[in-house]
Length: 294
Ligand SMILES: Nc1ncnc2c1ncn2[C@@H]1O[C@H](COP(=O)(O)OP(=O)(O)OP(=O)(O)O)[C@@H](O)[C@H]1O
Image (cartoon, rainbow, N blue to C red; front, side):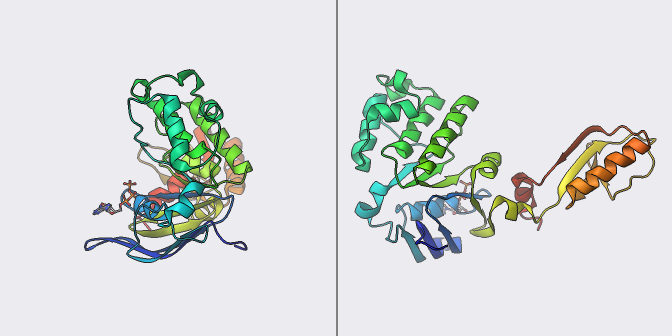
């Protein structure tokens, strides 16, 4: 990493009483990156992010954001947009008033109308927060990340409760922010989104990284899968395979194209129908499932 990282965490430890929740965690996020912090329940993601956001003090280790302590709120806070799982806007405020409030709290400058348009709430500007649907509330939460194009944006489960159109719109807006140079830290349980969007992933388990790297680096450690139903009368397969609980045959391979070619050639030569054939590269889900079994 050549330039100073936007986030620099060195040997972070966090204790809650006797419980060691985060253990010697180190990672960096470079300017313009989309970094996904993922992990099992209770892995320590929230504790880590709260420290990086300046809400929590480290038990030991150092955390730098833009080269400064995130506890120095006056220096760091105006440069960050934090979309929490619930932003807790007052139910009595209107949408427009809430967005204005984001402006005064963040000390960033923007046009309320622009922000309302990006989060697709222009038509709800005069509606009280208490009258919004779950998805509309989530889009209002997203306004905290958009207002004034912050340099560093935290997105905590950003698409939970959003329909597919709103999800697409949110990711379009995130892409736009990235084009303008924003750095993004994402947490999500939608692994597909992380797989599609993240430049790098930190995968936490029990307070430490289980793995860290690009999606390709994480998935490279596990084989791809070919699955199909095989008729009872079929001759012996040309590949090593196992039978799954639903009766499907599973072939695990690090040479997907070559083995698929071999299998299809064999099926054609023997006139065997491979019913419900599926073949695909390793997914992040598989990497997650392998945690604990490693
Ligand atoms: N205030 C607290 N006091 C004591 N233990 C805590 C406190 N906050 C979190 N913990 C514990 O620290 C561990 C890490 O919690 P954290 O919320 O950081 O995990 P997480 O990765 O965000 O989990 P999840 O995906 O379930 O939200 C958990 O075992 C949790 O029970």
